Image (cartoon, rainbow, N blue to C red; front, side, top):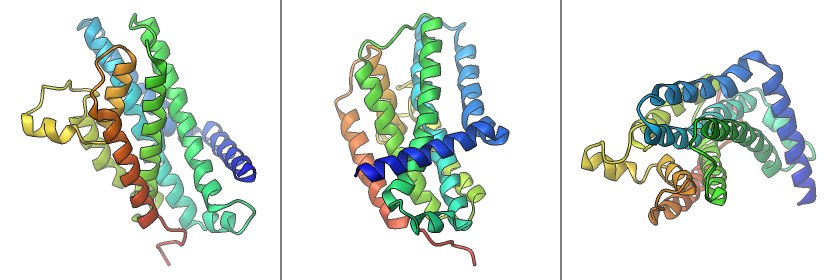
Length: 245
């Protein structure tokens, strides 16, 4: 266990070094998602403090889709197709450590982004969360769910580019229906019912509960259910051998 943790830490540190030293990776994984969040917050600031709070808390949740899903799916697939994962598997690191190291690196990127939005919330007068534990549960639980989903999508994709493209429908559906940009109640009833069971919805609900909104009792249950489903999908579809050739 201790050895696995040391390998996870080492691989995560390597991934983070590669991201922050590579201009393209830094832009796509870190800066572009923050720019999108900043734009949404900027456009909301003239429509009242309640709307600013809604958008800010929504972006803390929404950013989970980028590094732990879109970028991580591409990482896993590219490394598998280049036989990097197989070479690592032949070394001292276990399968759990190899996958966990990359996942941890992506989660750290998301945490940095989430902290940046929390700081922006303070600057904009939204303040700090009254219950930071709920926000932490939302952020870490959501990151785990989307990292597991990235493994499943990776297994079905033959290149890093296709893996990232395959995440786009997931991202668009979550952004369109989950209450991160459009508030609950603004959609038709049938779509509201569907939105309640999307993986991004309980993350947003828990973040907002941490900032003082009422906690929907089903949100933790939906998040746990998605963690279980994502784990099953990752186990079923993730592969170590290249799909091409």
